Length: 365
Image (cartoon, rainbow, N blue to C red):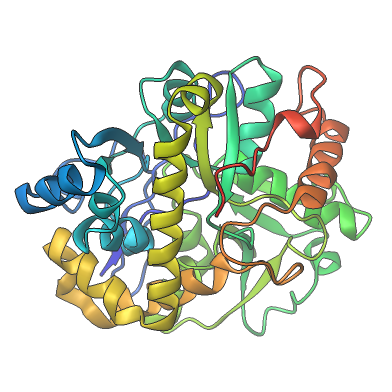
């Protein structure tokens, strides 16, 4: 059984280390590896370039040559990207006059490449965008993909851990003291009047914290709502999860573009966002469309269709912002302001930045 990558964050220089997440689940243990240097044999393969028919349709829809867009998903192919696969295969991008190339591969420098214009638009975590802009990387967050922050803390059911206060004195497994998982954990602890000094942090650079939780080496572990709880349950381990979303509305992964690219390709980017959101709505109404598009592009994932259906179902839930109940894609500007203030208080924003510099909703339908 394969643990698929998560869209927890896109690392940037200085503040973050590369992430990847791909692993095998055995009968008695789960091993989680990071997304960024997964071996080619371990990752599913995909061909995300548009077909000849789609290219022809795109050319016709625009009355001339299609506008080329390079889209960086930043992780190995996964059912979590079903909306992009569906929009590509169903011809939504082509009908909008776009020739979209999905770079569905690990890339620890994605945010930097987006800022440089080497990638037109890509998935970026809000907790990566904030320090990136603070460091002068010219990017802006233009549409929300994960309305609910997917990073969580997991514990075994029956462990006595049911609230952040219960983490006091516990061993918590985490890949490292960086990235969205680290920020999320600090928010959870702070909500209970605790700090990281009140717990024992156990680092797992190989992303094996879920295996350690299962084996009893740690009391709790960081993970993602659409991944580890599902994998652990399938391995016979019931879990409880602690979420930061009701404490600090950290912005989840969304579509990030460079400011220069936004100025130069605004119409094409708006068409891309609109087509992607259409696919999200289609999949939310009929998840099988997302599964079919994923299996067509990434045949390896069809080996366990039931697992992929569970992961996609959990992913769809995270697309919605339960606080605002806004349509897919909408940006929670109030949440961004709170997150900026929270991260600044933690010393994670090296230079002053305004919330208005972080997001731009002009591409939304």
